[in-house]
Length: 321
Image 1 (cartoon, rainbow, N blue to C red):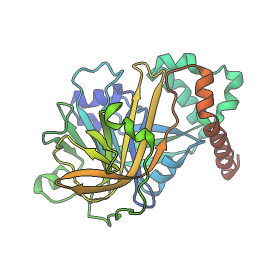
Image 2: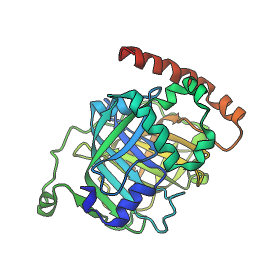
Image 3: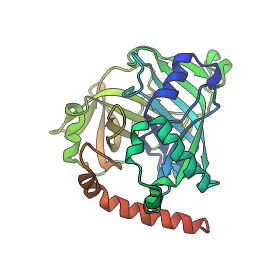
Image 4: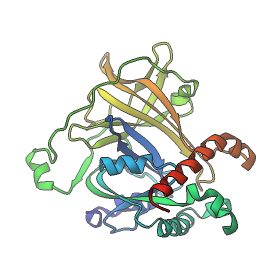
């Protein structure tokens, strides 16, 4: 499908440093993290990858192959006035040859992000970060693509679909699926949520559409601490709003990707006073390498790295390695 797309859309896939990749877990919770996309114009799939030490997104994609990829942050791409592009697709989780995946990743990450080469350890030390370098690839075959040509979703997007006849006829391409209800329960507020609106005037909001595919869009966001709400703005067009589980993901990175930060808020999407908001239930911090030195980064991630190493050992044991 991608070979027939406009050149500008293929350039977005090829040159963006990050894509906001969304899976849906067994509870129906959409979970969105920024990942590096790998694509060459004309390829049938867009690839992303995750470390063996943190395989949840791959496990979720294997259990439910309906995934989404939003291209909404052009930082470092060199593209001016880039479109915001949403890909809804089918995932194939590739962990069939972990050794080959590791070598592919080591080659591709330097090709895609040359500045990261200085961050890679000498070969003799690679075994200490095997939990990171040993990769699981996820190949995403696009089924439906939304393009907001001006980068903002205030106008009707252009739609490219594998089943264009069905789109033109007005019939949905996929049957509606059971929609997860809002979680309810106690509201969970974290001080880092205050960064939404102030530090991150925009964030990616993800929900599950009626056909079961995740749907993501970048919107203006703000926080209402007194009401304990994340408020959504921007008046986007074409978003299949409905109450249910949702995810708000904030992230940023350097032009050369020498540093990156990210976190997400999971909660309930609700309509209040004619607008949409998220009632937060959980804040989750990602694996971050913020601006700063090696020592401060190691201190920040030490507990996570220990957990990732244990997970990678367990994953290898399960594969008989």
